[in-house]
Amino acid sequence: MPFGLARINRMFGMCRSRGTVSLGFGKEIGMKKYVLAVDVGKGKSKIGLFGVNTQTMRVETILKPKDYAHSESELGCLLTRIGDLPVGDIGVMMESTYVYQSPLVVFFRRHGFTEISVINPLKIKKSCGDIQKVKTDKIDCRRIARFYFFSEWTVPIEISEEHREARELSRYIDSMLKEKASLTCRLRQHLCMVFPEIESIAEEKSPITSDGFLNLFESGMHPETLKKKTVPGIVTLMAGKGKRHQAYTDYAVKIKEAAKHSLYTAKEDGVEVTIIIPDIVRRLKGLIRKIGELEEKLASMTEKNDIFAVLESFDGIGRKLASHLTAEIWETVSYATPQKLIASIGINPSRSQSGETIDRYGKIVKAGNRYIRHWLFEAISSILRQRPRGHGDIRISDYYNKKHSDEKLHHYAATIACCNKLVRQLYYRSRDLTKTKELIIK
Image (cartoon, rainbow, N blue to C red; front, top):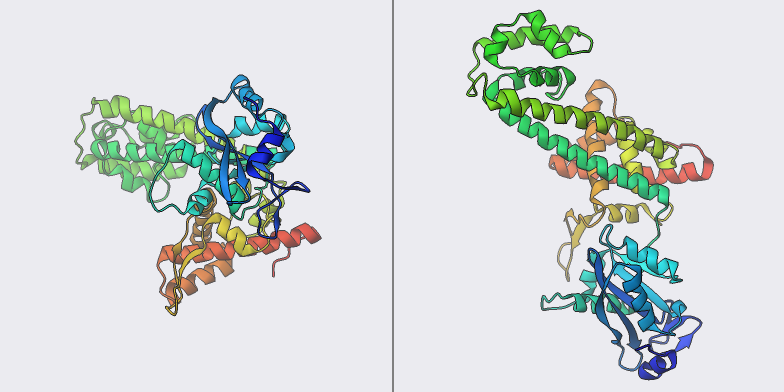
């Protein structure tokens, strides 16, 4: 049954004043008069309409939460139930579920809703203040409504389509890198049965996933087979259709010598040699090739962004790391201070103080963007690895040595401290570049 606006106003005694809601505190809060609280699910969501009673200062239910499928017909029924209640008086709030809320955002925007807020679920969870642990979809809708009316929050900034696409591609590459690591680990396990000495030979100068060794593994290598081959024959297997590097000859000599004394457990014609390892290698080759193509695509999508130029100004941060960090951060103008940017990443330390006790700083909160944390850690590791060879940002490197060697912090703690320093420098350099169009490195 449609609810008339006059009837709802009489029910809850709500005050209209310049599009704001008066909560009886002598102060008007700039928000909509009603809220559609949405508990998002996959393919369907529970949605209820709520208002606030200004006399009892409690959230009141106008339309009971009900399941709606993510379709035009089902969500159209919701609009019919709202009736003649002006869309301009209704805000929409839902928790972020990565992608499942996207159809709802598109639907409500298309039907004239101007305030659509997608909130971090952690904020709503921390604000509910319930002693008992009770969770149902109806209770979640009510908690979202209570958060809307009685908590301090700001409307999240909508990201641009360019930013969204770059971020999605970066995260897809990250998933492919994890798959590559998993396949590499499985390859190492089977190599321990077929030719355990090969891994130590490979890791001397190049990774086990380099082209030469993958070509050798794909050919179905086994110590008994390699013993019968000459050094040039092994070089041919490693080169495949590519160029015969001098390094291949050095590796071939070591491989042939190791094959004579290898303590293997798999048979020469076993499934590890003939099926499993060649199949893993073929999958690895395809994955490595695809990752390389997507890395170039991501770099072309992000290289015109100011953040990309700033990140590349740090000696030791290359094109790949700069593109991933740019895709996640994108801009710094929406952060009032570098500390707010650090907090959004989740690398700020937790703090504990009560009464006159000592003010202590603990582990990082990890409540922000985990992808930025990962790529920042990779960036600092890259700088530290290159420093002994004369590359790598000297200030970051010196700061790490100060924390790790002088102050005796653990490697991880010192690295996180360097991440904080890198983010602060990134913040100020990007602000300077925005203003002057020049990189100012102080």
